[in-house]
Amino acid sequence: MTTGHNVSFRGRYRLARVILLATALIMLILYATSSRWEPEQQQGQVAPRVLETPIVDSPATMPAKYTDPTGDRVATHPMAPGDEAFQPIDDPRVPTAKALTEHDKEISPSAEGSLYSKIGKLSMLYYNEVSKETFWYEQALAGHRIHNMRFGYKHFVLRHEIVPDIWSKQAFILSVLLQELAKPMGERLEWLFWHDADLVLMNSNIPLEIFLPPPEFSHIHHIVANDLNGLNAGVFFLRVHEWSMWYLSAVMSYTNFHPDRVLRYSEQTAMEWLIQEEKWGMNTTHVPQRWFNAYQNFGIDNTVPPEWEWKHGYYEPGDLLVHLPGTADARPEVMREWLGRVHDQSARYEIPLADTTHVKNITEFWLNDARNEKKNQDTFWRRWHILIRVGSQQDDQVREAVAQAETLADQARLSPEQKEHRVNEVKEKYRLQKIAALRRAEQEKLQEAGLLEEQAPTTDR
Image (cartoon, rainbow, N blue to C red):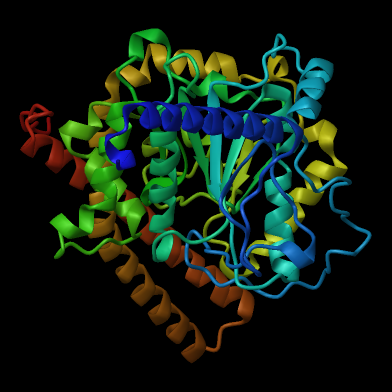
């Protein structure tokens, strides 16, 4: 008699299998409660992970590669990590959940015993080898620790490349977004806050929650800021929502569907062009750059009509952070300077929220400017295109005029002071000429669009 047809044997076999499975499950539970499993890592790599606070690894365990968000090469730096002027944080390891809970109870005025905020931070930092330059990026990342602990922010940090170029940013955000969407509604994060690695958090007293839209703007899923070049995707908010999944998918697939379009700033330009479409733009709002993407002061272009207010959102003491794009090879040095400022002059920069105008300014924005998103963006891009077309022509003219003035001054053997005076007169003449030309160009555009009534000609009396 074969066992395949023996009913009593099959019953005993099934019972034995159930007993074995139950025993294995009990052993697994006992093991899980007494130990913590960590994935095996290849030598020289740090696996992607979720950080409750940033990691500043010892040189022996630094990640494998760093991708510069703007493509600038990192320059050499005269100061080694061991220099006394700026020491690394005392404990570079991630605190346990228990330690973070105790820390929240000790210093957080708003945690109310809860461990995490409904906002999660995301960033990425990886590089080929450890150097003096990478140290300052790690220090900037570690600068989020107090902020994270104070307000309970989870910090997700990508430590190796997912896809070529900096498209890993969108891939990583999408992966975290999908993980959150897979959770029950009450357990998931509600917003993701992306920040590039080339910024310094300056004021840990500012909660990210103040930047979120009020309930009447529940259709807003994407909060961004422009600089003078258009969208800057170095810092932005994204709601944990199905809309965000489709949006990120559209960004990542942009070159597949538009292979002939040249992306001026890679994935950033793809994001910019998508939110100019009604499908994505109606759920996006542009906020003042200073809120959470302030730049260090590069100066103001005085050849643009002052009523345009054409300037970057420059950092002021009390702001959340300072973002440092465009600093190229000097970026580690610049990051070091800003880290030193907040370290040595914390009273000047770490201003309590109640002593700032942030809440007042943000409230006024949602009451006024946020309701005119399309009009504001139409104005921005109209002026941007005018500057590219008319402003560039005027700039070419002033360069030619200045070169001619310098040549004539040399031929006349003028003194350096006289030559400088002559050149400044030319620059001022063309500055006023450029402002007038830009104003005329905008008036023409407004008339073409039917947004400005044509004035009747006047006669002299």
